[in-house]
Image (cartoon, rainbow, N blue to C red; front, side, top):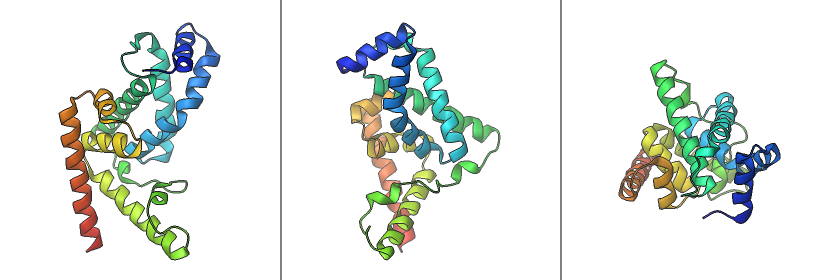
Length: 189
């Protein structure tokens, strides 16, 4: 499942080669940052949690069994780290998880209408509303939606990352999408 280069980097990393760990970090920093950013929506905590994901991964790389790709394994660690953080935040009564990302967010770039000032404004507004809809999802639904529709993982990879069967992934994804559509319709009406 892995590329030869990736497998070799993982092997070297297991042997304590810091340069291999740095290469894996460079390759996967952006996907992990995107995952954490979409799940948490907090600029201050995002980079801290990204670092925590990599620390956990490199600290337990000896336990990587290569049944899935390294990326899938790393995404699972990222998802679990985010879910743990969300749970901890709820217990501590933090409400800042609802703050949307600000500058540097590219979610509106995916929408139609870019190129004119009005189109850019509309795309930004629609992107913000879509992010609000995603924010309203339960962590389990949000994780599946972000992994599949934002990160582009296959259904099978999402199932491995989240630790549920394929049918559960599909039903959670369908429910998450339906809820987002409902909430977007409320906004548009």
